[in-house]
Image 1: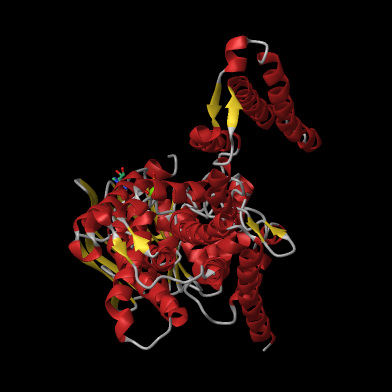
Image 2: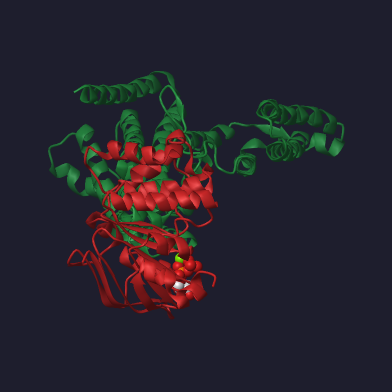
Length: 388
Length: 234
Ligand SMILES: Nc1ncnc2c1ncn2[C@@H]1O[C@H](COP(=O)(O)OP(=O)(O)OP(=O)(O)O)[C@@H](O)[C@H]1O
Ligand SMILES: [Mg+2]
């Protein structure tokens, strides 16, 4: 009984939270930030669902954008075809279409998941990547969905349904977290660790892998269904390989297998590049100083991680290395400003935002190869180490 | 007859690993298989537990054909395999490993059985929340056996449980094998340590490059001059 009360309370809390975000965002935030809030929710869903396939079950799938696209197009097409001849209002219709997108994408997940039974590692990666490209190229040439010039999804949402995007994100997180707490979820993790030992335990490895693919792609498809009605327009270039790679990066960066890590990385990576867009002029002196300091910082952190073993020294050494490299950046940029060629040259910030993005990733992977959170999870109230 | 293997042929690609191998295990027995490295002992256990499929031949467990059945179904029938090299889930805690051992069960006595395993292996109790990759080799072996017990098997397949253990731990492991057997678990044991394996076994088989060459009671094989020369150091 108390179990159900707790369950109901947490659902109510989640739904309430979604509407709170919705209300707050619409009242207080600029349009472009509202857009980021929506995209963050979609990317959380995408990263968490890919994490289920990649991080938790250990299937190296890298074409996640394909399922996103299948869901988006299925939902978009259904709306264009059926919306006018049915009685439902948009507020009910759009969630329904997200389900349509989810189901369609999960069928696609089944199709891709089946070869995953025979392939592993790099080979599976190639198949999933290829599948993504096939889907994109097929839609590029398919007249019913507007081919390369895209398709308008009419009607789209009149105002952004932020709450719906966040409800989807929170649902995907809850499903993954709850799954991991059941015996079945342990089976998913076991498959990642050792397939032979798992089947010796009675885990049906085949079914587990396919289930991960189907569930993971279903969530991506629902995100797609939302996107279709949020943008009101779909075009194949919205789902290029870059999107797949960004989602994959979120999973790896967050720490493969960690749901919390995926969420944090999704928020960071979906919003950071947009904020970097605002950077104006950067002087060459500053850039060179930053580059040198980053290298010095990485070297320092790696030195600490390999040679310093007393925990108390480590606790000082890590922040020390990072603060040191920041100070170095400032000092160096002042010093380098004395060199006239560097002082006078400057570049437009928006042009180097992708470079900053890439450098951040490279640095993170050098300093923390296991990802931001490793395999750890952040529980309410306590930092639980589910695995080391 | 609890388990009977009749004339199985097992291949790894072109490698002919088991050649018309037959074996029988009676309810309540400890049966050992001894043989040199590469003889096919692990292959035989893997075939029984469904991880490998025989090309021809039959395997029957309690009157039911099990060759061709998936490994996870075979666990449900009551055969539990503690594979060579332990294969515990090193990134998971001791407790999670034990829970995975009970993966096929949905009854309410799982916690009780976990308690029993911890009573049998007190070191596991002390390390229940610890990452199992940090256990010592002997502790990992205890975990592997404990995990295999969690499915409540009627037939336990043990592949080299004493591998890499110090002599006193080897003794401990073998006394546990005897204890488990007394409590009603039938055991099929594969061992490099031929002397011990024959000592505990009711009956035993000798496997040589994929062929069964001898079978007798454990005692008789211990006294057999050929076995003495080849497997017991003269
Ligand atoms: N996955 C595999 N692929 C190809 N050949 C294999 C494979 N596994 C085992 N073999 C071969 O099959 C034969 C039997 O191997 P098996 O592991 O059953 O031997 P074993 O009796 O258990 O040896 P050991 O005492 O060293 O564990 C060996 O010649 C081995 O090289
Ligand atoms: Mg072996």
